Image (cartoon, rainbow, N blue to C red; front, side, top):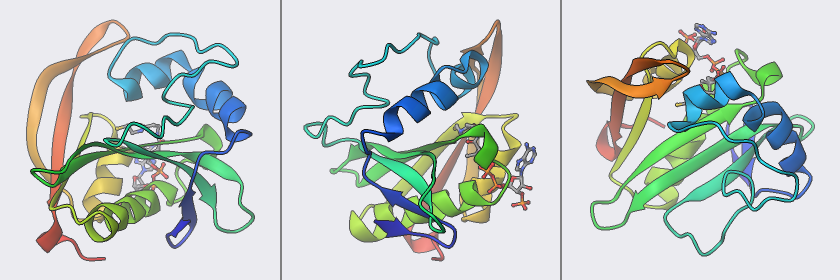
Length: 176
Ligand SMILES: CC(C)(COP(=O)(O)OP(=O)(O)OC[C@H]1O[C@@H](n2cnc3c(N)ncnc32)[C@H](O)[C@@H]1OP(=O)(O)O)[C@@H](O)C(=O)NCCC(=O)NCCS
């Protein structure tokens, strides 16, 4: 397991799946904001890649996020779009509603940076998030990510086009 100050990132367990499906992916508005695509229901037993890990997909590494104190599941974190030529990847995370606003998001970003830069030897990490997602923007900026641009009206979310912000962090800028 990878450890931060408050949370750990471990492999996906079978018992995580119903909790993540119910608390994260059944939320139409929340999923529509976080997924970058249309919400669709996930059936119990489905092999949806957001829930069930496909070990053959080398370009993406999904983690379950747990509290270090007690091991309760609090969300998901992913290093995705891993490009081994340019040594770059994207990071994404989603916390269960009850786990938000406690500093866990900032900690998850820190642990994903450690995984990306130290374990995987990457040179650049990137985050795309909706321009009004203050908690995600702050979690990224607290870890040194800088805003590199605004993708105007790039996301169709529940009836309107919203801007996305692109943030990047280079290995040499990162302060663990
Ligand atoms: C975005 C998310 C991962 C952030 O994690 P979090 O644990 O809630 O954030 P933190 O508690 O670490 O807070 C980070 C900062 O945002 C601020 N913040 C937290 N929630 C906020 C809110 N609802 N509105 C405004 N600011 C907020 C905190 O005060 C903190 O600011 P600071 O660094 O200036 O002190 C989490 O809220 C989440 O899972 N949201 C839903 C899914 C999502 O949006 N995922 C990202 C898709 S790109």
